[in-house]
Length: 541
Image (tube, rainbow, N blue to C red; front, side, top):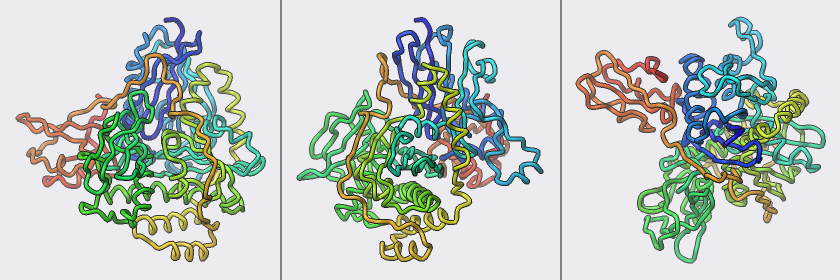
């Protein structure tokens, strides 16, 4: 086949990879994983797991999945000459196998007392042999782009460079809509970056019937004369009309071209918008007989899902309110919004604006696709771009807003949680917003211009198309002395990550990619004999 490059996006909710013919500059194939391989629902869970289980274990799990993605792409190892990765600082540090504790603790003094020396996160070219466990020929070049700062990594750099933000003369905001939502506000020559753990709902996770953007995922619903039409991603990740349903009862009124397998994050946004518009959702409740919005006989949206979605929407809205306050501007001053990532691509942008995911004064909204994978692909094709991006990262380092230290973010997010989780009336929301001296949350702009640059988040899937890895990484088995095989751990697992194997000595099978990790531990907490120890699970063999 000749020289081939591999581009990887190590996202918080899943990995995406592409094989690229370097001579023809053509994409050969694309692979998506259903989830992230590490236990946990967000980037902080992954970080906590890495600290508790050990860097070596977390690195091993990540590399095991990278090898799985490369293998699924179907390229002979001897043909691979370059690999470029993109992601946030935690994901890239775990990939490289370097110190991550500096990303977990605030305060230079504390880090010094703990003996933590922050590693070099500038752009670098390594050999495959430098990455322990990477199943590639030792001489393959591995390209890792620079981080901007502590919380903001190469994926944030990608959304700025790839979206067109840097060339825009308007006051503009770019957001990568994912579990770890990065955003950047541009005012003239000044750029202020921020990042918030929005949670996994916008990636279709922690939603009862949720899934990543993949074939069979409902990404939008629209009201028709009778019922609501589901719009579903087909095998080529293109939207097609699905079933027409009665969302109050689940009756399929008309069978569509594509079957419904689950709900992606953008479908969550559409359900919220349409449900509120039809007065079927009055936060935080669903006013249907079964307290669910049905998308057919087997898929539905619940009140629990509203709470999860509200956490994500609220974090993002609190984020751009905080950036506006940091810049000394009002929300109506932000005239252009860029929406990056799978959620930013497939979401109905007008509905996203109405529910609060886009600055309310935005008159132009660009949907720009997966910028992180696009950056990795550009670096594979032209390694010199690695050093150009390094210069950009250095220029941005003085303009980062730590949301975790921001009183503005704390107050704005508290209001959002009260609105989504407790049904706080708008009048009361605005009253407290004025009292806290937050930037004014105006009514959304009526008819923004929507510019959708691509039909799907990954514009070119390659001649071989897309493959989907449902079981990410390797399930592991564990036995505990004193375990009676009662199954309480299996029953109480919210993500169905555990299975009791029918053996004489009780054995528990665990899927790390489904496990909520150190933030959950319901398996350990609910063990009646108190013999289940999360720390003893052998996540890598």
